[in-house]
Length: 134
Image 1: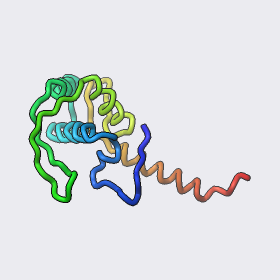
Image 2 (image 1 turned 180 degrees about the vertical axis):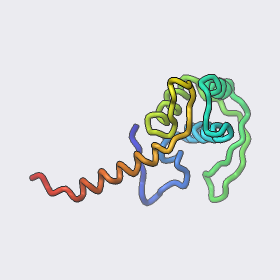
Image 3 (image 1 turned 60 degrees about the horizontal axis):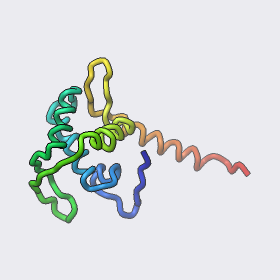
């Protein structure tokens, strides 16, 4: 996954940096909020039920951050189950936002993303200080 951002127009919401479409942003935010409600842990079957509920098009309520004032919206959101796993959950696992424990068969919100971002920053500082090769 590639993260591209404009330092002069930095979004306030982390999900808007990580995901390309508004619908992906909403679904990722919903997933994190759902996990927070469950003490940051969801089992494999709970994750499947969450994905199925999205696939079936459940009524959701979310804050729209498009304008200067967040607005609570209620709308029906339908998101394909396969796309949820491919475009939301798998990228969140590979970036270190969510960890999956194969033995316990559960998903957990993780701090690895923060550690990885700090590591990237350190890599950039090393590159800046490295003498020219030519």
